[in-house]
Image (cartoon, rainbow, N blue to C red; front, side, top):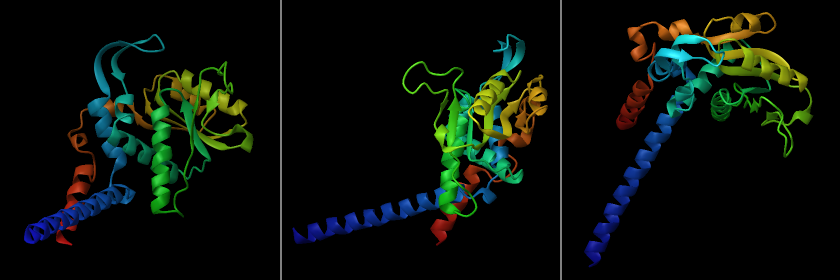
Length: 254
């Protein structure tokens, strides 16, 4: 009986060691995926958008125009991997362009998953590199002010803390109408607009309107997502699968 008990304890300890080892590997994998220098987030995001969010056919757009393709970016920005890639891609753009902001927001609902991803990734980056990345709060802008509760049009940040430098981001820019409505609401709230970003620019007039008054930057153009590029099957750099394989190999060899 005692021998069997000790044997069971031994097995339990071995399982515990394996669990600890697996947890360490998972922790190392997550940390590796959060190191921006090791991954081409924009390239991976482009590949994911092309795979999940581009649809060919005949579609009526919100503007009433007829198009032979449709971009359903929420299929990417609400995807677990897509959300991380979106957050990193925008943060990297802000760093490259030296754009400093106190918050990032945009029109609901297209911008909601985008700004949430940016806010979450900025917090993770701050944990890894406190001096290199500051958490970037998110907000979203309703089309109209709520008729009940606190009657807010801008949700997510305290409007009474004084003027803020903000980035306005939108999902797809076609006519630019939804972005401009959000911009007008942000300006009325006393915010200073330091940049306007769209995940995809359809190049159908909206971006030209925005450039006249704002620092407008698209992440991708529709043309880039519609063109056939064999390299986009895996992205133009280290993929998330490569990172997982590399960290797992290093953990086994440690």
